[in-house]
Image (cartoon, rainbow, N blue to C red; front, side, top):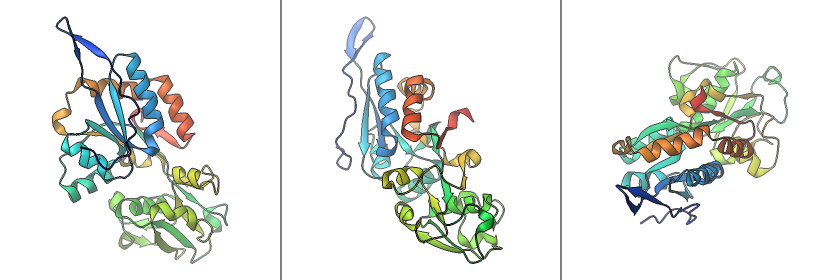
Length: 267
């Protein structure tokens, strides 16, 4: 039984399929997600209904339960995480889960209330990045992309402060909980920012980043994740095709994310 998610079935579409000439109820494809991704998925569920595919969308309230539920077989697929998050979750929880198909990548940016360019940053400027292993690496990669630091070759998303080999402006890096980075905007000189949280906080313009990472690091594309034994489930392929190619879903993505996302399957 799922106990940790918000009980919000978006669509349990009561449809029947004809099999060998006999009408039989088909099992719904159960898709787990979180609030940040639910609206476009709702549109995909609605489109699936029109095509005779029964889908139930289940919204979880945290970032642990979707993988626990998937590993237990309570849902068929989840959609909320990128590859680095999945690999970290597998190592921590011992899950046998694999990415099945790409979704979108949400851009992450570097924001400043005080400065209009990286060149204006003074020596010793304070920079707030996320404090967890996955998101701090992304923040450091952004700083490297901006030319503010140099990282050891090949460290990728696993980068830590110990991997910084050059810091010409002697930036002071502050590690802050990812969901609290919005608050650091008023105090730090430069902040790693997540547009979804910025929109929720309504404190500054989510499009005002000095730099976004985009598809430079494709490992951050959100993935549809499954158990390996589900790879040949035809319902998965049908639903993901709807998500990736339906104009209705693309309109819902545009409405939910504006221009601060890219389609990972188009890269």
